[in-house]
Image 1 (spheres, rainbow over the protein chains, first blue to last red):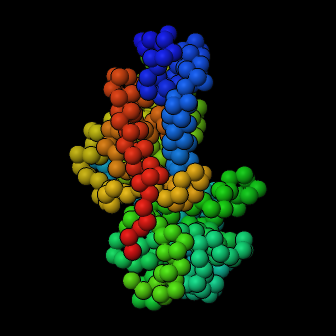
Image 2: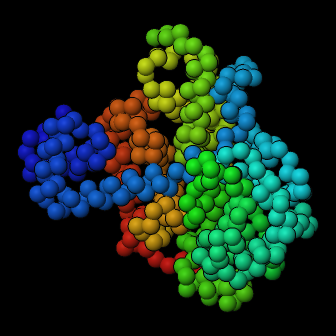
Image 3: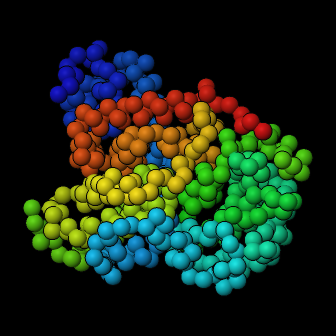
Length: 250
Length: 172
């Protein structure tokens, strides 16, 4: 058991345990007193708390992802079979779990469709066909989405328009941008002069359900896609402006 | 040991856990679809071993442990991580102090992805899922001292990766 009787000997492990809520009341009181009396300890505590906060916040979007029906059924104990002796590498492809999207389903090879929490609502994107077009089996941005991706800087655009949230270079050197629109969010990369949509996440009708994420947040599916593609860090404002002004040339 | 847990409430409790199980799976495997495979397997095993769960104990800790074991026992032996989330070495973080902005979230997730699997699991259970040290140690099947040591090293690494002074612009 850690000896916390001497306030001056309280070490980093004790501070960490305190921040993590692992100390009983009397030990916590001693650490509190130590922290109050030592600015260095207080600074360390603030650092630990900030890291904890960042971790919780950064992985929060996962909880808003819709649970695939197959997992939900298994959790409820439905359709249980003999225990798996072999699992599959990619058992449940996303597209197999989602209902067909009337216009785009099955057309766009390589396009990851996902639902950003809540019930399925493909109609969000489906009712905005002017934003998307299909060419050579790929989904391309067009209309306001195409213009927004081509011209807007991160943060441009009103609430009802296409907003670009993040720009970066992928590992092949292409520029990619995440975007948010009334129907949802997604990721597009510039290829041969056009913005190819790689991920679309439909936004659920969650304002009334209290589930809507903050405007700047991206669904976990889009974040995952960014993580898989990004090379280095996201562009800062100056880099983004320079890239746009150069026509997104590699 | 055997609680004779009634099946409907077990299913309800398990269903409520699924989003967290998927998140833990993503942290553990580094891949969304691998995570869902792992959750599927863990759910099957949870039902299979339902009688071993004691009513009144935390179902989340118990199920996380099943997932951890499943990952060690089966998934990892058949399937190496298809893709680690991060390949770029030594990247710092973007703007600090902005709550869960996409840039921050990505930087943090990239940093976590660079942790060793053991450290990542400890971070996932304690700092993301909010389990106590004791619960997390039990879920991972390790002594508490090992858990706290892994957490301390993981924190050091994360803080080094996310330190503002290491921030640097993206090479273009």
